[in-house]
Image 1 (cartoon, rainbow, N blue to C red):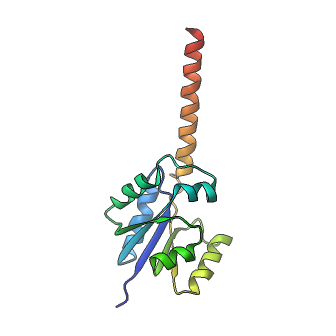
Image 2: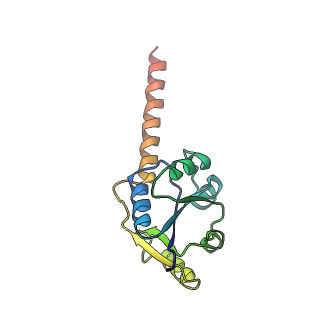
Length: 153
C-alpha cells in the first residue's frame, strides 16, 4: 500500500478557522500531513506583506495542531523545489485556486511528477487579509483617539 503524504502550505499568520479547516481536511485525505509554513522572507518577496507573527512562532503554532505530523519551512517560491525537499504525493490547496492560471499551472507541473492537487472549500468568511485589515483599522482608530486626547489635554 502506498503511503499518501499530504502537503498543505500557507502563511498561517493570524491563525484562524480557515487554516484549521484546511489542515483538518488535508489530514482526512492522507496518511501523513506535512504543513508548509511560508517564511517571513518569502511572504515579503511573494505577497509583499510582513507577517504579524514570526516564522518560528507560526511554525510552533502549526506544529501544535494534532492533524499535523511535520512542519516544513518554505524558503523558496517554487513548489516543485519544495516537492523535491519534502517528497509529498498530494498537494492541498483552497478551492479559490481552482481554475485560475496559478492553479492550472500547479496542476500541470505536479502531474508531471505524479503529485495530485486536491482542492478544499475556501473559508470565505474568515481570512488573514480580512483580519489584517481589521487590525489596521483598529490601530488607526486607537492612534487617532490618542492624538485627540493629547490635543485636548
